[in-house]
Image (cartoon, rainbow, N blue to C red; front, side):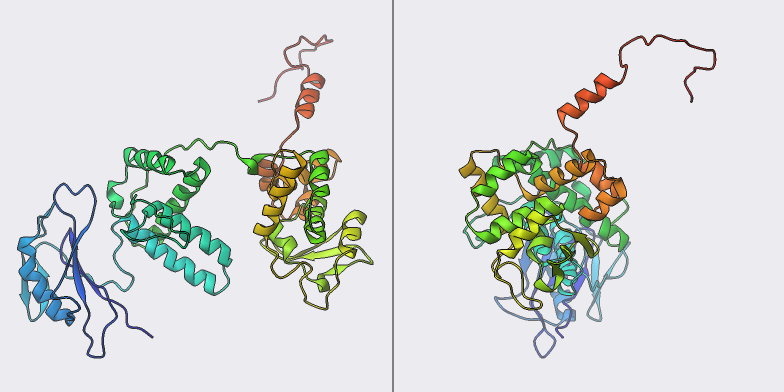
Length: 410
């Protein structure tokens, strides 16, 4: 097991941090990190010693004392002296040796939180795709360091990496939103990234690693996207006709016919399918559940090449992303508005509710709580709203007979 890299808080603005794993003698390479005058939240660093030179912790602290007077500090730390190889400060607690590292900037916060998410992914608490999405959200929040880029060569300009958490204000977040929009991020992406930053901040508060200050919230107006469109049955039929492969068509029929999540559908194995009783066992984000499938879904599944046991129903390369891409191409070929698997789930919920299926049964089929199902997936059609307004005597005087007991309650 690799030893933890120590860090020592030298004062209110200066940290001495190890930047490499110790060699066999216990020596590290070290650097000073501080916030200068007028730095606008950007952290500056200085390496100790020559390139690649290593020091013990006591030696690094002694060397740091000689460099402190040369730093142009925004809020200079109290006078520091070295006694027996240790840093001591006047008016400040003794040196803080944190195993987990000090959280000062947004960059510190997101690195610590992503490290936690990596461990959760390793033990199966979250899916690898969820971890990748959160890691990329952290990258968008922070921006890349000079020379950094992803596999596609995309470089994100610096954003909040060196901004201190105590300096996060509504004005700074509004500036971040404007910068992200100019870089091509969608409003939905920006909204989600800021939510992730607040989630990471609450996690750090629970761990006692940041103060009790509440981060400001800036309202982001999310524009409608293809994900928010609920198709009609006729549009789904048109897209089905344009699906290029049998498994694409069968998967699309299953999402529509069961209201299940796309990820649950692509992970179905043959031992969870009963084509005699027409049932399927779904395992995924929600609790495992067994639900019936329609004869049309069963007919589509019967066209697939049957595997044995735990073999996947759909090809090994099949994924929810592959199905989304197939749906996008099919919508374009059919000339219908683009919709996503979430749109199909909303259509399934709408059809179940219009058929009079009880709320608890609909929730059991779709794998959602009643609250989530009604607030996110249930979207009444205009004809339903129009019918409700016609049936209710809104804006009209209803003739009696009235009695003195006919009063509003409350």
